[in-house]
Length: 133
Image 1 (cartoon, rainbow, N blue to C red):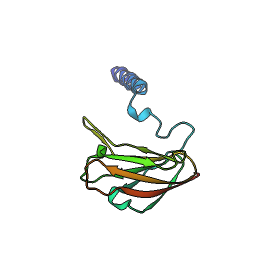
Image 2 (cartoon, one colour):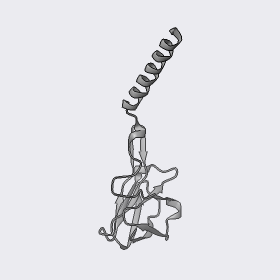
Image 3 (cartoon, helix red, strand yellow):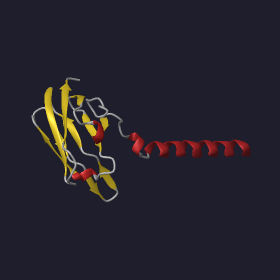
Image 4 (cartoon, rainbow, N blue to C red):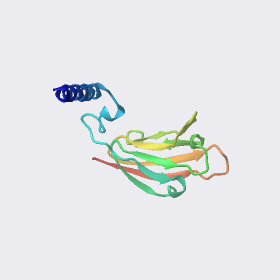
């Protein structure tokens, strides 16, 4: 009889622990994809490889530009057709460092020119071709 009471108490403890763990929240509870949309993987390229290149993106996709040894926030960019794409400047601050990039906005083709404030560096000129998903 005593064994039955111990076993019953153990079952209650396990059930209570399971119930409490179901109530806890963690970062794994968040969805991995946006509601109503697909995740679009960025295209990553080195700034050194962009001169004269043609980069294919789909609407909503981002070109992530690795600046190598140069500061990520030292580049500025100009997009010829801002309806097709936009330049996103790099940022440096605290422990975060974000590369510059180009965001594809609409179907079309445009030229992007990037310059660097650290003089003596030739402007980078490349083409972005944006298509539908």
